[in-house]
Length: 157
Image 1 (cartoon, helix red, strand yellow):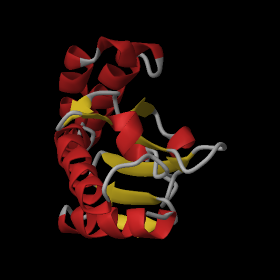
Image 2: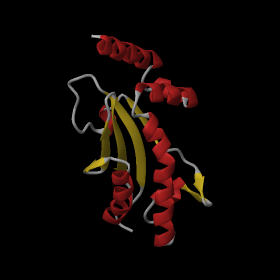
Image 3: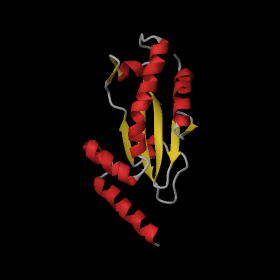
Image 4: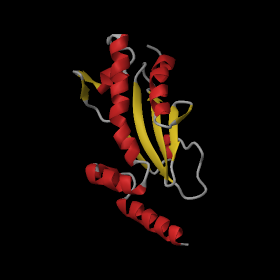
């Protein structure tokens, strides 16, 4: 499998969930956030990483922010899916049958969707912080609460 074949598996699933593609990333814009699903190619071999991110909307937003420009960022976790580690699945040089790899990649995307859905809103992000407290090291929880307070004040105007 090559990079373009990999993207061709990802694209229809992301499109079905209202994401738009630009390069190696898919974007979904909501009232409060811009959500990013990003494929990052390793510098070594055909290994990929999946990054999930959200940019809190502030009014002067980038239309297609890079994953590293986002406020909340995480890498898809290492786990086992049908007996294969995500590292092995995302290493396109590993010896997994191509049909099986396609199905495993679809499973990774399906597992990502609930996280991406939480990244669509500040309340969802607050819920995600409860599930993944390590996010506090990236973007402080207090900043999320402040953004929620500011959004509520703007709605009252």
